[in-house]
Image 1: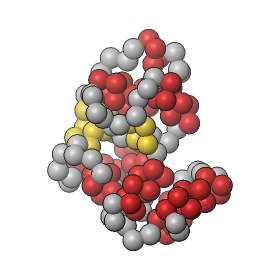
Image 2 (image 1 turned 30 degrees about the horizontal axis):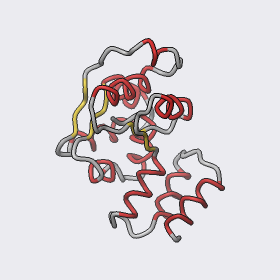
Image 3 (image 1 turned 90 degrees about the horizontal axis):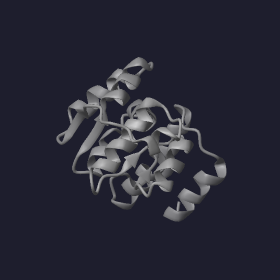
Image 4 (image 1 turned 30 degrees about the vertical axis):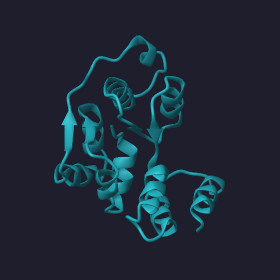
Length: 156
């Protein structure tokens, strides 16, 4: 279940394929698709998703009161609601409040940096640093400290 930020950021650097390579199925809730389409440069990211086997736009599902209490955006709520409904799925989102919610509810979560980290470990990219630098240039917000920890974890 993928949220808007990872889709837009990875789309801007032509790396949507990393999402598909790390999962058997790539699900984008309808609310997220609408949000992405409304952003400058968002439509090409959705086009790239549509070309991937196992990728689909999912209809909205009911959001539990427990999730609503977190006061998240519609896209984040749908990502988390879908993740809660599908055993073995993982939420892919960068929003800090949504990540905290996922963790509090015991839902598996990964962010854009985590996608890059896993892609590097699987040999899908030769080095993480250039990809992360590119992501930062197009809008990834992450502290220097976090980026250095991720790169040190990879030995870069």
